[in-house]
Amino acid sequence: MKEILLVEDEDKMRKMIKNYLIKEGYKVTEAADGEEGLLAFQSGSFDLAVLDVMMPRIDGWTLCRMIRKESALPIIMLTARSTEDDELFGFDLGADEYITKPFSLKILLARIKSLLKRKGEKEEAGLSVGEVHIDEKSHRVTYKDEILELTPKEYEMLVFMVKNKDTAITRERFLNQIWGYDYYGDLRTVDTHVKQLRKKLGNNYIKTVRGIGYRFEGE
Image (cartoon, rainbow, N blue to C red; front, side, top):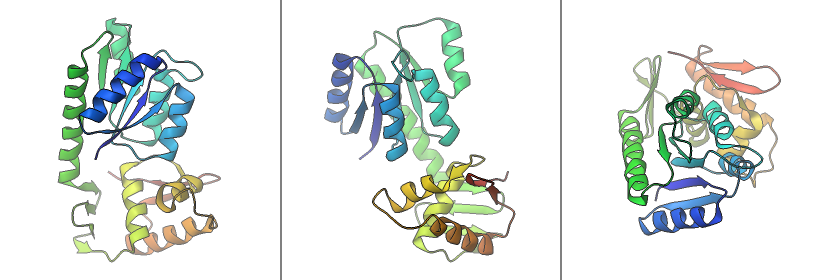
C-alpha cells in the first residue's frame, strides 16, 4: 500500500483529502503544520507528499526545500495563490506538481497516480551511479559488471545513499532509517557498515562529511 504524507493546516480540508485518499486505497499520515510535517517525514518512509503552501511554523515552500535536500520524494504543492511566478517558484524549489485551490479531489488523485507511476517506472529501470547498478526487484547489486555479495543492512544502506545521492546523511539518520527508532546501538555501527561497503566498492563513491556523516557521489 502506498503511503502519502499530507501536510495541511486547515482541519476540514485535511480530513476531506485524507478520507478520500484512504477510500482510494492509500495509507495517509497527516500533519497539521510544517513542523509536524517535517518530523513525520524524518521519522517515516513515504511514497509521495502533499504540502499546503501557507502554514504556521514552517511554510510549505520551506518544507519542500528541506525535503528536497534529503530526498527525491514526489511532492505536490497545494495553494490558493495562482500566479505564474508562484508556480515557477515552487518548481524551482523542487516541487513536482502545483495545484491551485479550490480543486477537485479527482484531479488531485489523478496527479498522485501520475507521479507514483513515474516513480515506479524509474524504480523498474533500477538505480545506477557510475559503475554501480542496483536492481531493487531482485536485490542484486553489480559493480563493474560483477555481482556484489552484500549483507541485508549493507544493501539497505547502499540503496538509501544512492537514492539520496550528493546529500550529506548523518549517522543518526542512517540509524533511524535502516535500524529503526527503537535501535539503541552505537553510532559506530554505521561506520562499520560504511567501511565494509567501501571494501566492496572502493573509495570512489562514499565520501566522509566531517562532523556529519557520509555522502554518496558519482555520475
